Image (cartoon, rainbow, N blue to C red):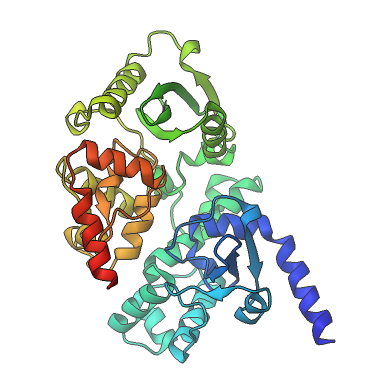
Length: 378
């Protein structure tokens, strides 16, 4: 009977692979305790909010309902997110998350959540962030936005969806469209009507993609092939109208952006003074982090903890790392200048080797970073 139950649970997990994959890629805090995932190349399993490098494909991961299932499959626990650790405090936070999920339409202040959990507001703020990776307020907003998106996709009106998610005015979204990544109306239509112009050209570090809306550059990437870049562009804007540069006459802004970025890759010319127009749809926190990244001087590096301190949130190191990983315009917003405090160059969405080339071209002493890494490991 026990084996049958395990089989039924695994079938249920397999049916939700796409949902869990989306949550994993977004490090969605709402899924913190819903599943674990194992990476087949490393045989390590983690929580979906783990700050470790994200797996690249769905086929490279396995999903589990609990640690026992992961271990039976041959995986070992992550040393970073410690998925095996459990405590009464962690259990309380998980129950509080369930309370928020069920009562997100109500006014959920820190004081009310404090009473519900039994922790003081200060202790709750710290513990909630430690367990889920976000603050209680950010979690509440993530739950509401998810319900809002689902309602809009189901065909409900913007007004009905906004009030149903727990907001007291439909105007909220129009003044803060970055929460959806586009205007409410465009999201309701699945992004239809958004026009993305793009150029793919050769560069010293592979094929370069630069894409832009009418407002400015929205996506920059490097890859080994045009096919990979186009697939990435389509995955980011599945229902937008994609126009190659050859289809757009007189697009000076896009041409200017491509020239400046290409010049940087070829000659190391600082992009910060190019004043490229950007169209970055992001949370307020991401915007704070990206602004700080652009303030890192050319040829210098900062640690994730340095960036967290500079924005006034010294304990938000993991959140800073997530914001760097979600940067849609690397090179322009120089997330490659952020390195681990322990030394080395760390991870990079465009590839570690490319990160090394970029830093070396800017004059960063890679040998010193590597020496620091080795010293820290001893």
